[in-house]
Length: 194
Image 1 (tube, rainbow, N blue to C red):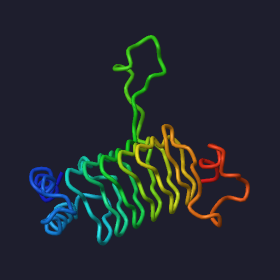
Image 2: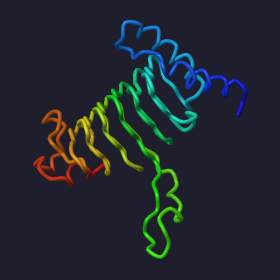
Image 3: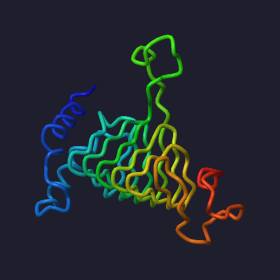
Image 4: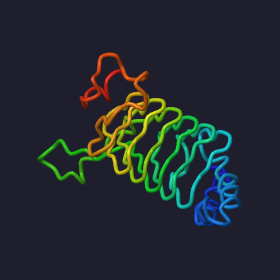
């Protein structure tokens, strides 16, 4: 790890991470300082990115953030993760890219190791609500909305609004974007055709 990267990580986790949220009276300056400390940490960081208070992203490697997207207050990202442009993220969002193995019964789960990282890809113009959990390998299509508290276990089609645990299709944002083969009532429709 380079000295510059180490200094950026120390500046972020030791100071900038604890500054007020962007909607606070001093939020504008906190936002600028957090963005400056994170500039060299991510694999890619687009223009106008907002990293909110207490966001956790490890060392930032394998995380790509598109233009005008944000990491929500107290979010936790474990790469590899790719956020498109104009992604809104509510507080307490968790994006996980690996998991524990549990398929063997002859040894404790703590000794089975973990699965390798399975990338999460979030398309452009996606709204991720408060306390959403996105599990390994999920792709969220352009323009989708993930309702607050959802646990997203499978791919989400473009312009779909999903919610629940596990997340299921609620409806599409506009009838023009609904796939021709769906009546918008089946869980399978939201996950098909990514």
